[in-house]
Image 1: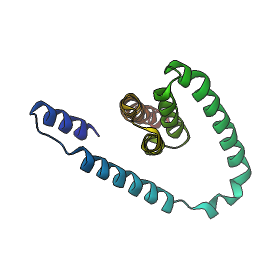
Image 2: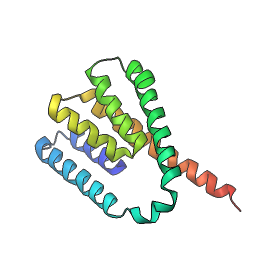
Image 3: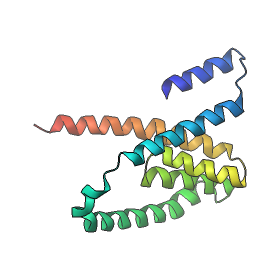
Image 4: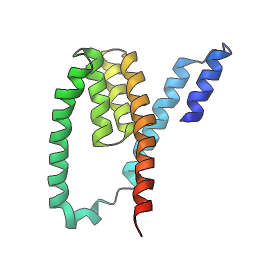
Length: 146
């Protein structure tokens, strides 16, 4: 991701045109491949023992994420169309992963129109900040264990 950010900035600085439709196509293909590979690796039958507690945790997480998305994110983002798209991306990130949030936003923007603010804010905050912070926190917890 950092390479992509660096590359797009260098191309922009050198005034090299990038075909947006081709870039969007490969973005969609990559996202769909990631989602398919993630779903193919799920071993649902091994989860049968813990289905009850997992469903309860999932329900509570979904409720909390929905309430936080509406009462905090939607209101903080401005209560407009861009805020709705940001909420869709945020909900996908919280309940899944960054690619799920991007898939949510892509679906909404294909149907109702573009939202440049949302497509800038969510990837930057989600992918860069959240993923980097997540890697640091995991490493810190791994250092704590004997």
